[in-house]
Image (cartoon, rainbow, N blue to C red; front, side, top):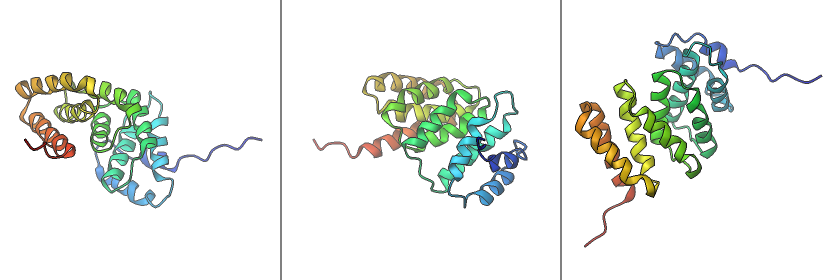
Length: 189
């Protein structure tokens, strides 16, 4: 008889998340983070929730991923590939925002850059200001790693600088500063 995989213990806890209380998510993180398979369980929870389910479980799982990253968890290329696999499953602006915030902070492997670029470009027109701001930031950072996209992405960012809210413009300036710092000092004349 085939053995069934054990149930993901995070799913029951994530079902308690109401979509509002970050304290619940912090408590889930604290009670499960000791598990050496923690990130695997969170990725599994984010990816296996049926599309017909309430968005809060996936939203909570993606928040847990962002929280783990902010707490110092490494996101190697295999995890970035899993992040990219979540893109077509996103159904709520909070999911997009948290995923964009992670993608903004991790190195994107070359084989995932086009998918991330397409996601960020689509999210750059989201009605939510925070989603737009982080989408443009990801768009700039990833677009600058693809020579053929730099000019086009800079034009998009320049247009947003002229037309969008101050918070979005500030995020663009911050992203451009981060890109400049990462590329090193300009050559001496």
